Length: 338
Image 1 (cartoon, rainbow, N blue to C red):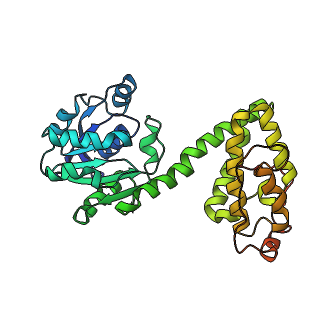
Image 2: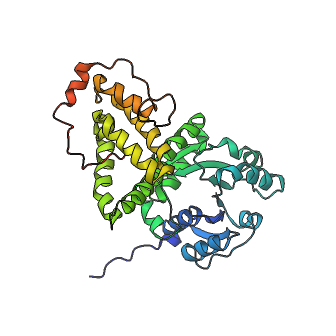
Image 3: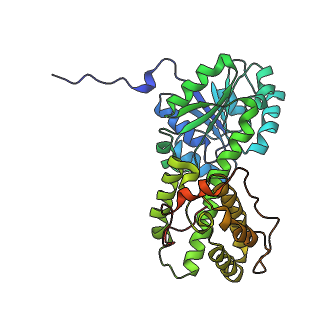
């Protein structure tokens, strides 16, 4: 008995011609994922050599052309340019008549909602804001990472189903974000993801300076466990000298950083202050241990430069702090990854 032949996704009648304006790390990956869903990439614009290489890698045989010509060919256009360039691009495309009525115009900026596409809306386009909450490398691995990736979706109510359907076709999970909440949503992602890269890179540099031959191998299990614990328990996952109130250890850290990596001092102090505030507010840092610690962080001891430091969180008391006795004490090998 022969196995029934599966239909080719390219034979679907509702497929769209897809264009990409801005062949950075995001656009080609999204277009490639839409191609897997049965849509047809037809044009891409890119200026730099790196953009052209990415387009050739992820969208082979798709022609490169100016943005206006991309819009002429495409039913669905992905505007994947830097945030600050997006408003001007949309206005320019609308003013020159490049936007066609009924054309789906999608931007991937986390900062903006759908209103930034109002000039195109007035020209008859259907505006969607679809932001993948993912970091991109510009390689084929990005297409795989889109599976299960959350997208911040903002669109007019009548376009909501279309927006969510596109996200699902790319393998993602739609998460509705109100227009006015887009900047806060984007700030949250930048705080968690972009700053994490900086922290990890600094940590690796310091470990190398301390003689560790494979800092990535040392950090991998630690950071993986810390991330998992944080996602599961939030502030309850805080460990390390700040959460314990070990002012002497924190002062020693800052002294070492001042001598060997002065560029890391400001970041260490800022994250330690934020950690102390959160540990106090959640009853993890005992108030009787906090004074010396906050003094160190404020620069009141050991000659450490700093600002006014963290403040005591209201409502913190010793009874709540005592809950951590015997449950959050380690030998210090777990590290303090902020």
